[in-house]
Length: 216
Image 1 (cartoon, one colour):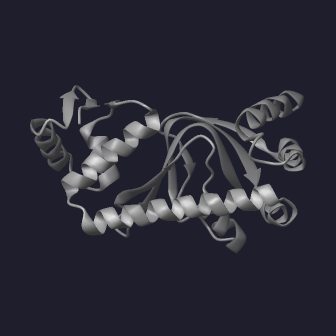
Image 2 (tube, one colour):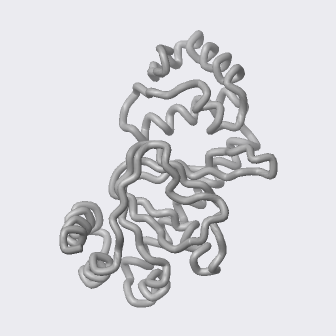
């Protein structure tokens, strides 16, 4: 237990010391849990009871929504310094998760028990600002996802998706399969392969075996 507290304190101070006031940091250190998840693991699933919300220390989580046919579509990503403020709303309403969070890149996170979340809104100005800003960011990202679906052609959505993914991993070279892209964009692998080839012919990307390099 003592080792867990030391680890949480170290991770928290490295990532959030300039975000939260000391009193809040002290409370988090006392009651939070440290979690380490590998790529492909589920952070939160649709229908799960919300008991904790994550503070992402490192890694990437993709947040998905599922339709009535169990087809998934990507809404947004969580990365270092983020939390899923939409989950916070579920916590307040004591409702179950409407989203699925899948680990895209190995994640370290600090899990905060939901029973403290509302108290911190009242007691800590930095927490209020953090939640409001997080909610605002997630809302903008969901609006962008809706706009992409409504107004962008699939090839434009694909190029935006690739650009966003490369920004997240801080690289112009992406390791990913055509099927993974198709799953995220809710289309078929054959369609994605065709569109990637078209982007390559236009000189925007260069394709390799399960690799994509941005060239424009």
